Length: 116
Length: 110
Image 1 (cartoon, chains in turn orange, purple):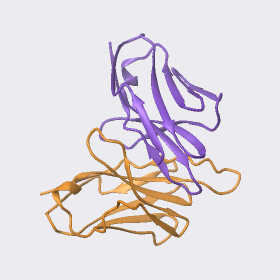
Image 2 (tube, helix red, strand yellow):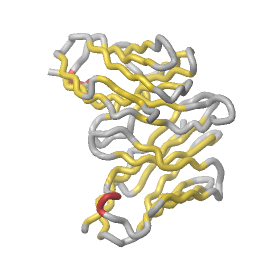
Image 3 (tube, rainbow over the protein chains, first blue to last red):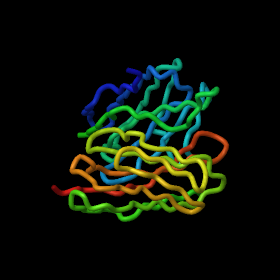
């Protein structure tokens, strides 16, 4: 089945120690998103890629970076995690191309990040 | 700025007790309104897309409707397995930004 995969599902890192979360998709969607979701809150968009074009939300801290080396993969790098960065990180994809464009997002299972 | 407000924040229903969840919005240039279901510790699961006022979509016990100012998710004769947080989201603007509401946490009691 086509899907969005996130690794790892759970990540524990130390305060200030860089961490990378990964996302891959088999849907061949051209748009990929990274969201941060804290308990009982709405998913907060960090950035998204429209094809190769990177779009950073104005309030996304500089501590968060992203890479998309190809259509299928996207990475979230947190350069110096703080205690406030502990959250669920969600990757999502959508298709905005061609006759099958639909815009709805398909989410991965998320990575739960703990900062100690 | 686009805004999405969902109500109620939490809803507790007896099994079989129908109800509706509300999503009100203000947006410049709505391109789509989405409903998602999210179970604890999991990513949101897509349910419906609505594109224009008057549109309705159904799936099993769920029915989504859209007006120019709000959307409703109607749940008919809910079962305990319908317990989840239901999220509403807007697609607007010239690029692919989606704005989420904070959700309604639904609990269906046997």
